[in-house]
Length: 356
Image (cartoon, rainbow, N blue to C red):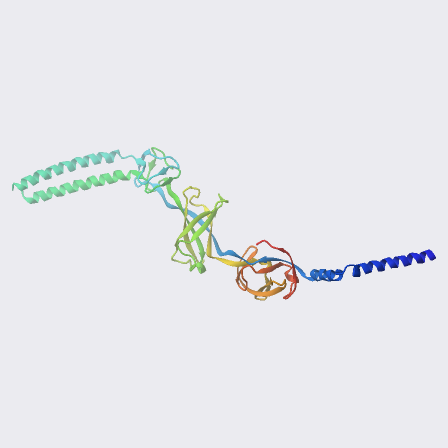
């Protein structure tokens, strides 16, 4: 029994000594503990700075690619194809001969008309000499001059018919697939080939009439196609329709895209994108925004480490970011995580500053 009492007394002495060491052995032990407790009472938050960012209203629409110039080559007369002077997909220059139709009969008529014209001109010169000598009246000279003009008109008519049998490129471009062969009988309306100028691609797309005041010629656009998903084509608005569709309340906008590499083709479906009123504005992370009714505010961290509720006016949004129109200055730190635990005037403990 005595041994048990001794053990109890020794244990009590040890506990008392340890308590004295903690409270009295270290002079500042109590103050440090109190300070640690105060720090732990601060609300842990993460913050980010308000930084400038580019904001813009994006207008997207679907459009169809068209060639700068496009024509279907056809014959204007009924005749057999005598010569084809192109291959599928050839690049041709304006005025280049593409197809010749049979024209032997026309050439024969041309030679006959030329002979007649030469003979009548010779006769006119002879009559003029006689009229100068007073042998024939001036009336006979006028009659012969009319015969010469008639012969000239006949030659011009034959040459026009010959020209109709020669099909030329009306502009510089790229030919499509050939639709006829040598010896084929063609007539007006028969498709010979398609010719497209694709050095520039035109894109027609529609936008809502409420953007009529924002769309103007010269605005830059971007376009993407399903064939080249990783390529962005840049162009500019070239014209805006003068009429609004009464059924859809939209208007047609035309843009031009440089296509020197010939990647875009007429008929392709393109997604167009126009950036309206782009501007550099102050922005904050979307997670820092607190909304009550129709008001918005954030918690700003002051220099003394306290949170201050700050009303702001916001504008456009981007994924993860919000445009700030009023209420903040560049560089101010706002709470991004822990917003629900913060109150105005709360002391906060910044865990980490989010990347801007």
